[in-house]
Length: 261
Image (cartoon, rainbow, N blue to C red; front, side):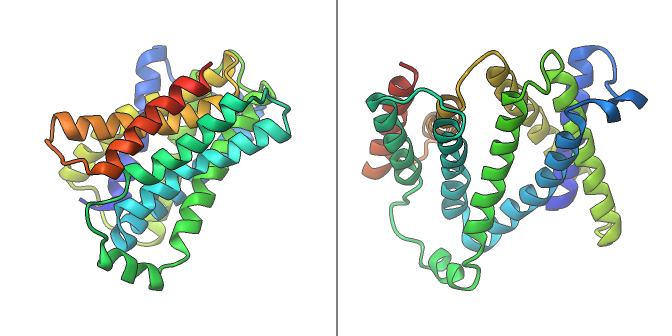
């Protein structure tokens, strides 16, 4: 499987999921005039760039460090929500945020340190910062769009066009860098990725639209996804959890409970 081709197929799959749910294509000549369109265009560029950065990071410095940086991006919208948009603040929310950050780190600690990943980190030290910056910028932009009510009543249109534009950017990159054509395995991987990817972004946007605070939603989303994937690995793939992973899972569940109060 080639990363770029699979990522492009994933975005077009996500777009067609939106079309399937709506029953029509949101592509119209008037969409360029929509208040959310510039943000969809900006986000789509970030999507294709930083999805590839994430894939490259996993290859070079490993899944563990990359996953931690991806999930720690929750700090960005939380800080903006609390200090810029004046969202509610409490002792419980502070404790939950600390637990969420601890959970992200603990769940990703392996049984033994990977000297290979740490050695690679010396050469690719900038990748964790790029991954953190990219995911944080994406979450902040989604948060900004919803805080300013730019997609009210048009969440499906916004998300679908966002994925379509991401796929188009990907095709342009593929042609520009002469990355070849699509193989069947690339398309299959893209379909598998695209369906959950669509619902992840759509439900995130929808939750913000109906009034969830960003300082609550983003930690809950990041930690819940992390806890769910850990449980799936434990139950279905019989993966081993060390004491750090178990502690991280407990912290994740406590964080979700506390931050939702």
